[in-house]
Image (cartoon, rainbow, N blue to C red):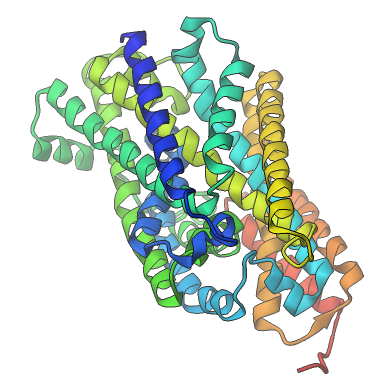
Amino acid sequence: MSINIVLYSFIFYTLLLFIISFITSKKIGKQSFFLGDKKSPWYIVAYGMIGTSLSGVTFISVPGWVKDTQFSYMMMVLGYMGGYIFIAKVLIPVYYKLELTSIYTYLEKRLGKTAQKTGALFFILSRFIGASFRLFIVIYVLQIFVFDRWNIPFIATTAIFVFIILLYSVKGGIKTIVWTDAVQTTFMLLSLFITIYMVIKIMDVGFFEISTQVIDSSFSKIMFFDWRDSRFFIKQLLSGFFIAIAMNGIDQDMMQKNLSCRNEKEAKKNIISLGLILIIVNFIFLFLGAVLLIFVETNGLVINAASDRLFPELAIYHLGPVIAVFFIIGLISAAYSSADSAMTSLTTSVFVDFFELDKKNISEQKKKRIRYVIHSILAIGIILTISIFKSTGDQALIAKLFKTVGYTYGPLLGLFAFGLFSKKRVKEILIPFIAIGSPIICFFLEKHSNSLFFGYKFGFELMVINAILTYFGLMLISKKNNQP
């Protein structure tokens, strides 16, 4: 693979994003950064959210997961659809009725300022670590396979990527992100489809023949019936349902794009369309993983790497320059999509939920300057966090750290559930203790699940237990609501 081709592809793609940023940030109003002036076409939002939902983790890891988990991930993806329907029917109407900029303002209206700040803090923590980790995975792979050849230090590679994201997102905000996400999704999907086409061509088989091989292989099993297995299909379905609600319905990053749609009806179309498309796209990623594993077996290759590196190893070293270039472009797209909307939503939450600058009587120019400062500080924080991930040198430790981000969505889910389904009010001062206590209990349950629950292993459903504990904890500190 020619290094120059990669460099030219990187430059071309980056310039394309800056052109889009320049066009979209020309006529920006007061709500352009936060809500895109509520003029985002729902179909563009839905399409662009595919790239954000998938991210670099899906792009790199899902094909490799097939070796260990087969197609069981599809049960979780099917569960997502139920979650998206719940978001469309329950959450979006609430958010639009209250005309929210940050969805955690709902917690303030329902449970008070302490609940708002607690929810926002858990979101900032989870999204900050999650976005940094997703970006780290992509940059780490690019560093190994590309930038090390140019003798560019890892910290410099990270700074370049984050600085580029900062530049094209700082002015237009969500108005720019909606369109850049659409471009990033296009390149990610283009990379996916071209890779499948080229691998099948290299193997000299037809599409129906390779499909038959995938179906007949040991990789295509979707449903697992052992209730103790983390892949148990009912567990996967329920986990998918609640993960979709947590990571889309009560996550400012994803919901901010829905709130930028013209009206509630279009936001509902957006979220339902996203769910349907993700079923198809995730299946194709799993199909690619099975095809790559069949390619490895057929050609007697020995891939001495973790599952996360199956796709990168094959794309760079074994499948030719065309696939290598499209893989790198897809990976760069994933890198940008992992962080740009996260930085925008984090800036929104800090601006609205913590400093409440949207309510303060200061000039728009001063608000803009403060927003730029927040955005820049977050960018520096992401660079430092990624550097910490790299310095540990322990990928297992990093994976555990990323897993802990899932704990932060449980309290959020519990807070919103209590707000929606209970009419009681709570003692505000105790809310943070409940929100922190629930993940601690869940950590203990997961650590000792083997002995406590007859060999049962917790999977993503631990987040649901976390939410239930938060809900009932709030019930314990609640009282009858005498206010209308």
